[in-house]
Length: 205
Ligand SMILES: Nc1nc2c(ncn2[C@@H]2O[C@H](COP(=O)(O)OP(=O)(O)OP(=O)(O)O)[C@@H](O)[C@H]2O)c(=O)[nH]1
Image (cartoon, rainbow, N blue to C red):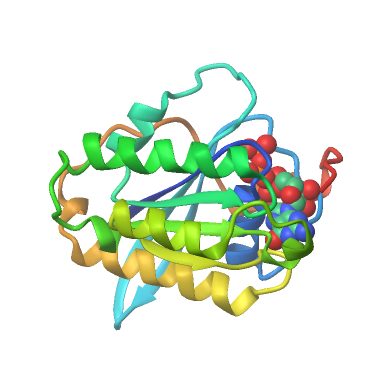
């Protein structure tokens, strides 16, 4: 069975865990405990083919055995690079990550980029606090040859599912899954995910 590895990257508090949890459990969790990096596993069927998805959720805090961004990029077949539309600095971080992925993962070539790097402007429901215009996101996506989405983990379940399903499909077609790379860290089961959800620390928007 095919293994597909997708890393969800971006600066602290942009909603990486919220997007993953929304995709895996259908629920939006306002506060989420994330004191360690982890990998969630899900068995999926795409175009009638079974595959094992591994979703990497990094930890923004310093933590033991934390992998570097370079390791995370080498490990993954596909990338969801997230920023918060109400936080300009998170957009600048996303820009740097997109450029690094292009350099390290794709060797600067045009090959596969638009299908395996998705740029996501999250928290669209906070558009009254917007600091990053949609056009800026689109421009970065076209410069970095990424697919662009603006959505809200809080309000857009269908869009979140479509986005993840699409990157998994693209990564599985991209042929990058062929060479197995080292995992950035330990993995986490769905039970652990649920524990995190209920044993959470408070975060504010
Ligand atoms: N309004 C709004 N808040 C959101 C959305 N997505 C996430 N949040 C909130 O943003 C905060 C951070 O979300 P997380 O999912 O923990 O962000 P993260 O990127 O995983 O953060 P780190 O684990 O610290 O790197 C939480 O308070 C979430 O409730 C969204 O779409 N809209």
